[in-house]
Length: 398
Image 1: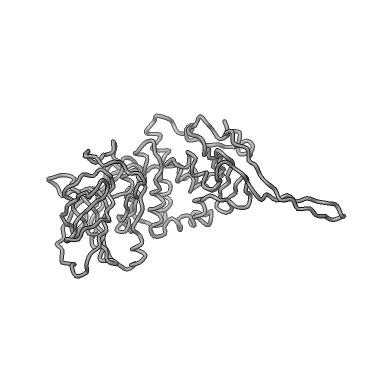
Image 2 (image 1 turned 30 degrees about the vertical axis):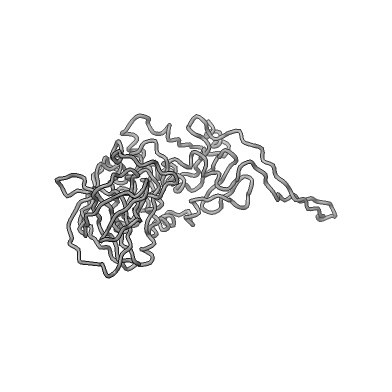
């Protein structure tokens, strides 16, 4: 009802609401409509965002605190000798800070709203404190009409034209990092459909195979993702690594874990001409439906490279240690906190680069076949004099 009232006041004739325009509890209709959602938001006139609402029952309008504003009074005269007074706001007193408040509202943490916010040409935000306006030319905030003091992803894209958006998304490393912004999803298998609109837009210009949140073009560098450390990591237990209830993405894709990730892309900028120490011989993707940017049933990489057999151990509750060529590495990021100690395999990705080598940390997916799954990323210090000739082998990572 709030969205209808807003639309009528803005004299907008049509309103699209996903909960009404997608048949609920229909998997077939959801698959069809989910593939269209990116274009729906990108081609809209305006998106209404109920930022403070925890669910559809709360709507856009909420009771908010009174805003106290202090003014500077400037007296003068105007034409004809009449006295005038100009009031300029000089101080705003609030119980909560204005900067970043939109990012604290429930809507900003939901997985589906990432592409909705980036693709929409204009957004009207109804937050718990005030109204925000976002577009690609001039963002505004209700109590500060000149400057918006919180971050806006629409600032990343300097023009409202699609080609400008694609150009910015397609910068080295940027496209993967934008797609991997971790947000809450009530259904884990929605990870790839929730960014399919962004993925489709990028793919329209790069002409590369899409692989579960990543692209074949530049995939060698894109494999350098790692889970960012948690401020309060859970206590390590002896339980097995938790597997998702349903398949979401291959282990080598950032989309396979429900945690924030980052990339070791600084080495790409420092050594732009360096070549990887491995070769991707084949990629295989099996889709769950007709949408090439939607849910996948399986996805694998066949790779030929240097594979070392080492041992994963813990020196403390969260401190990880892997020995490579008699050099102990502590720069290990595991995809899951409770990965068990024991044998691991290391696939050499890049190195030597600035005194470091980079490896994928792998474990056998089965005892009989040469199939592996990724469990982490390692970057180890080494001595150039210890570099040696390695034997190569072909493995498949699933």
